[in-house]
Length: 413
Image 1 (cartoon, rainbow, N blue to C red):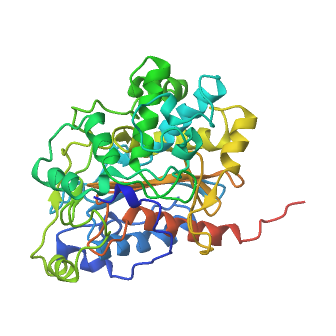
Image 2: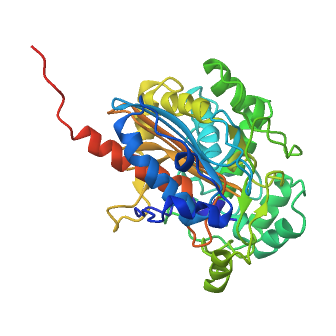
Image 3: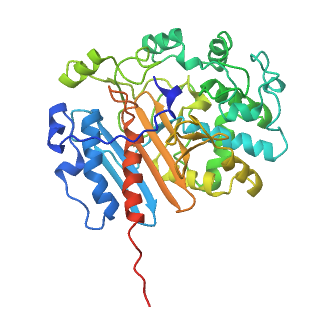
């Protein structure tokens, strides 16, 4: 259960397995049996075999990619919707976006700031009682993951319950009770620590200030203006994915992956030789993630959303500029480190977020300078070795798009 560590994987990794090995693990990849489209952009043709190799290497059943760029657009699915079958994944399939949901919550909170209903400098105690250090933690610190509040999703007992009661419907009170009963990581503003507790609190503040459910506030403010009908925060007691969808799989248990992305060497070996199989978690409850990670979408709708979120349209020009300028490296000593901002992240020149929730991994990013959008998702949050497949697919695409951008443009008289 790796939703708490979505933004910490920032090194570029490239897989090197052969496409023919797909059948060894019972997975068939579309590019192995089909052919490249004659109209496929050059970057897509170059990325396609790398993506297939990555999915085989990570033992991931399937993925969907969507790119809009000056070098061309590409919408494609890979692999299978159900392990052990040849059923392709529809490119309009619904999937769980995980912590991409945090950008929805953060954008609505900033809209409320713009409307004068709260201030970035307000203490969280003004809206929610009994928060440790609540008088000193600001709304800005909740948005930027600098509150120091304990992340309830790393708690051992919590993860044990996820494993033993996968259909349990969690309440916000239960989540916050875990968070508040554990020591804080540091004083407000003294460091960075990714914590789902922050975004659950922001969800409660949205409900308090709008008089609506968080789901309705997000829908009304973000998705209705764009005409998006397949992007939403589901009711906490609804575990279903709308059709069409692919099945999502989890390697290992929530307890095993609560503090480490990778399984033990022994368990990785068992996965490699087939004695360990992943669990189908498609219908497991995501109520525990709520405004921090339970959202659902499709690749094309998520692309429309991220373009507006980053490119402008939800916030005033001044507040939008402040949001994008707020990005601070997670690991200042690492030049490849991602940055975290006010309710979104930055990866190189792309603003967006990653998402990991049992069964699904998502990357969503938009580069406003080149007007390039990348949305990827895969049917495993993490491979046995801890690799997040959709994040790695996005890195493959970034690399190929960079090569395409280096090709001189033909000049015409």
